[in-house]
Image 1: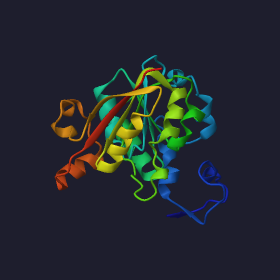
Image 2 (image 1 turned 45 degrees about the horizontal axis):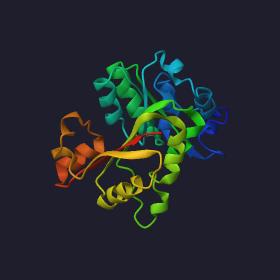
Image 3 (image 1 turned 135 degrees about the horizontal axis):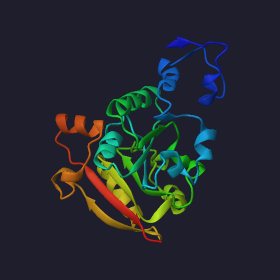
Image 4 (image 1 turned 90 degrees about the horizontal axis):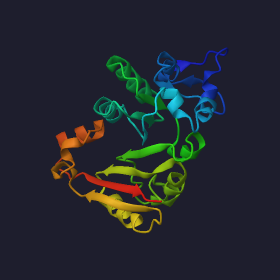
Length: 233
């Protein structure tokens, strides 16, 4: 941790009140302006025109909870004709993701420090073609806090294109079952694919691993659940 420079108000991007010390990676976000965006006003200014930011008309995909960026970078290398906006809150993970992006010289990825519940604040109407949520917190005992619930689909009603999809991976069997049940109650969406064993399914070949997924597979013999839900109207 480092002490606050009283002349530097950079902390105001992240906190309402100053602290005695800050995570050094907070300041290091400045090292990669081409890969990290942390100013909410700037993000919101691109609402409805993210293709202008990427300087192309390629489809835009969003990821909530990108960790250290392995999935985002894998997707951007695999699909050069897509743009990828990855949401992450932790400073070190954002910095690590940006550092790896620069090393790979990627031009189709952006990491932003934003909450997943704020999609409609910085994304325009029908602006994205897909949303990835990989291994979110299952919130056992506090399921109301989960990211995947009816409120999320209310946001997707606004920002997801018709034909766009939510892609969901989890090692938590009950979360998987609950999302399957939820999908049957959604008026504007349909379940188009699901499996309780992703790595032994027809989707395995195209699956891009997250860092959590790679670690999990190396240490445990546990199935990975996977769901695709498509917006139909």
